Length: 402
Image (cartoon, rainbow, N blue to C red; front, side, top):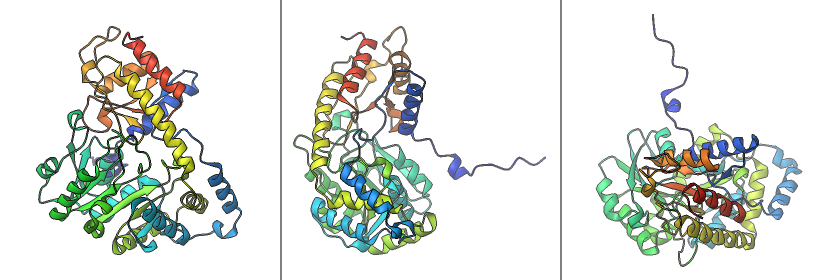
């Protein structure tokens, strides 16, 4: 008897569920069932989208032209606004023709790797890394090569780390600063050194700049193309409105790159999804054309919560907490909790510790296994001050603190 036909392709069947979304979904399901779960798992601002952006979308919904197909690469006025925003915020010039508007940042990530990777091409992925990056590389036919940097280096890779990982099959370097999940931010000098190295190696660079406006203390956001202008012809820049403007649900991102690559990406998108929803594009246009006052207010709140979280987590036994300089995550090492009885139970991985916290004190975090090696927990501080205080307090009780 012949074997049954495979119902799901190997390519799709091998994809892991998004760990961050899975934790968030479980926390929300438990809340819906009446349990007082506090979720530190989701990477999205808890603020509403600014009202003036919403009003722009409402007005667009009433425009007849927005009820029809529009260009696959994006509304011309939005592509121009993205080019102008790039000059304003990143300090270098691009043309509207170098911009592709995508259905959120995740589609931008996949599209970039799909455009660059042939089967077997290797992509250097500095870790800890956002859970979607290696999956997107694999879906595009590439091979993700993790390059891990731990607490001692501030979760930042060096030129030496990257050089040690290069093979004849290496084609792309992924670059993310500020980082999800660690909150680390590379200095201008560090960014330039790694950019010069990528240039000397003839590598493409895919740089995700989604957290560009969320930096704290003395940290500065350094665009790779500004640090090393010669890389412009072999760099794809990913960005979007989700984190900066509290617009995660609107699903508008973009890719900036050389004209020939963006044209190829637009051809691909024309078959994949036609165009991004026009009302969402209109909202993004309003966001990028307006001021940054709301962004500054949200950043100030995140900064306050960041300091509160670092202080609270640092008081927990077995936690080593580097101070994040960007995004809205803390990423403590928790290996000091392994092998130690916690309410009569002993854990040996961050998956087990996260499960224990959820079961015992109803606090949801994402274990480090979602982002690379075990031994870490990602805590988002994109939630209210009260929830941060209550959640860390519960974990303190679990460890007998407080």
